[in-house]
Structures are given as structure tokens and as C-alpha cells.
Image 1: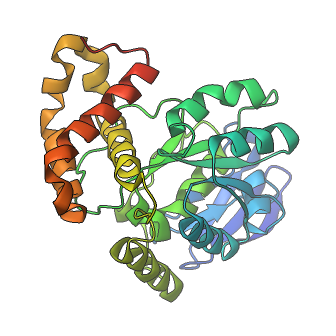
Image 2 (image 1 turned 180 degrees about the vertical axis):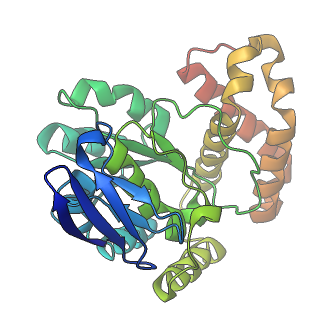
Image 3 (image 1 turned 30 degrees about the horizontal axis):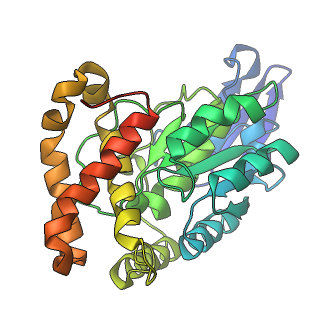
Length: 301
């Protein structure tokens, strides 16, 4: 949020609500599509009055389609969105997401890498078929909630405008949405934890709830048959997300060797949850990895 006053026909003064620092904005020199900026002093997002991001922060805009399989995780995301004047609509499959995109207008789509009927990548591939003339911004949500697992950013987002790891939902989801809705093409740069002020009390509580979901198994574990295959798909999806450059540049006959270390780490994660299935986990994970690669047009000999 910010306050503003007119200083002339082509300029205004805006004040950061985080630290009260003021800025003079020359509206006639404002680049097309830019409607906010991070405060140089404290990092708070400062909307420019009258623009799209200003209306979003006031709750006038901001219908977010949340596409995740897990109901409890979806409700937690809706809680984050609702606390920041966004309306989050939850669907649990790619098919339902495509129907919602055909019937209604959305400001942004948050898509999990793993969905029960398709991979998040496959949904992103089909977005142009159901979008209007203007492209809907999209964020890809990595499937495995494992805060220390990946130390690098994905090299490709498969058509998404940004990505988010689950353990960063409480602190990075809203800034990333603000960035995409304010610039559209992502020209304001990536949002990282180092750019953020200290967490609020609500962010701390949401993070604890997210950690509880992971610890109690409500995100991953399903008492019915198929839970191991489901988690194999989740891991395969993340491996593809963080190794797209390797997948694109490696010949099919050498590809499994190129991602062998990631597959091994995935097997270790499976072992921690299903130790009684040790003899089958490697085969099951590789089977899901092959299925995903095949869906991307890659045939492993």
C-alpha cells in the first residue's frame, strides 16, 4: 500500500507504507506495464496509484486459480491469498482447471507440477488453447516440499512465468503474484527471500501449518493403493523441473545416467517413507520418470 499526492499534471508523490520514504513518479516517463516498484529503503512493494497493481492491492482485482491435488494444501493457499485481498478458487485436477479457464476470467494461475490426471507441464502446454487474447500469468508450484533439497533455480519453467517451492509459499507467493500482476512480462525481476522484510505473525503460523502437513503426511500419503506411484510421479515432476537443461541437451540413450544422482536422492526420499518396499522403489521411480519423459516426446531406448 502507499499514499500519493499530485505535484503536477505529469507527476505524483508516493509514500512507502513500510518506512514512509517518498518518491516522485513522473507518469509521462513511466515504462509501459510498470505499475509498482520495490522501496529502496525497506523492500516493500510500492504501488503506483490508479494502476493495475494498486487496484489489486485494494482487493478490486485478483482472482487466482489454484490448481493443486491436495485439498488441505489448497485451503492453506487460499488462506494466504485471502489474507492479502485475493480470491483463490481451488480445483484439484488439470481437467477441472481447463474447464474453469474456459468459463471464467482469471488474473493468474498457480499450478502444481504434479496433478492426478496430468503433469503441471501438460496443463501449461494447453493454456494457449483456452486463454483469451491476453496471456494469463502463471506460477509453477514445485511438488516436493523439501526445503533443503534443491539449491538451484530451474533452467526452464515450461511456459510458466515464475516458479515457487512449497516451503516458500508463506513468504514468496504474494510478492511473486504482485510482481507478475504489476509487470506482466516479469520485467521487475525475480523475487527472492533476501528481498523480503521479516515475516509477519501470520506468515509464521502458515509456515508451521505447512510443516505440519508435510510431517503428518497429509500432503503425500494416501491410505489407498497407488500412494507409492503417486509419490514417484511427484518426485519425477520435480526432477524434470530442475533438470530441463540436462534433458534438453542430453541424448536419450544417456539421459538416465545424466540424472542418476537426482533419481538416487528421490529413491532415498521414498525409502524414508516406504522402507518395506525397498526392492521395488527404484523400478517404480524410473518407470514414472520414463512416462514423464515420454509425455515430453523423449523416447528412452
